Length: 481
Image 1 (tube, rainbow, N blue to C red):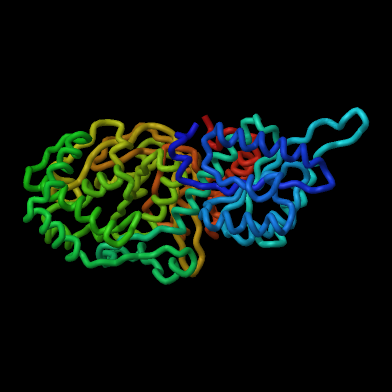
Image 2: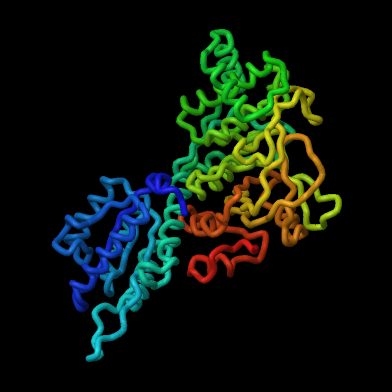
């Protein structure tokens, strides 16, 4: 179960609804049961008890009050609880005004009374609400008609909160772009205007010199945070580089952090080679690793869509898992479905299987400033957000770690169900060789979030039916044991 503190970052507007033809008392009863369950789960929600005597939505007067209240509260998602049959046009009008993810659910109906009467008719109302939401062009998420204590309800609400976090984070993403892309990396070309126009994603470009001059200024002034950062590094890693270089690594981390804060960014990218090495004499990867560790993803080769991929992956876990960000490099020498994912040190330290090392150099670049360790074993979800010609999608799926040869830098060997199929997805695109991953089952979360951010899920394995089954509550995980 998710940490309740992490649930608090998302605020839901709780909207129980009824229709007059069915029992108002029954609707109030089940609305209160729903409230009690949300309280038990630790859900952060805005209630509507004050809008009328019932604390339910069923008329225009209540609609106006609820709309105003939810907008003032700046909710991140709308939870429509259909407590008897529901007033489909009122909840659809509300959802259309708010432009946030929508969750639809209703408690399972009781058996008819001995005289053949029924108090509610909730399931039939769900069908009506779903149809009217479609008429209003409102995308929505559905939890199957179930008892309040059914596991599918609790999981569905929490997963919807994860979806809301993905949508909220994605729509408010601003990326620090340090330097233009390296000339040789044509694959990381992006359309800045299109990212802004389609998704609201903003870039904050600065030249390399603005970063490095700030870094050097921190060193010249002997900023006390440098020694604090070095001590933080020592807590995580075995430091095998000269102290002067270590000071630069810490100062570069602080400079990136300061610039991200200055420009209001939640993630970043950097032109990591080769001018940077000539200018400051170190690689940026260990600095990036510490930023990743602290929840500020920074990617290499000015890979903007890669940084977005990391933001998507981590937000789907509510920040409970840190991401790896890796090159998809080469096939396993023995395992026909094995593939190497590695980089010069950009993985968050929390992902390390063994104690991280800051080595003197790396075989690709003979400079200090990389990091080295193997990632933890387990089942991972992998994601690549990308696009071209105005169309965007997320390549998503699962893979598990496997044994493989030692590799310098940060790395993991992954076994795929069908590596040929995965490879074909990458070759045909629109994806490139960088991918984010977390040790969690987030594929259904990202797939569902895609409907709210207008980004199509693209599975590298034929798992679409399993994702649907997951949301209906028919299976607990799409990852095979």
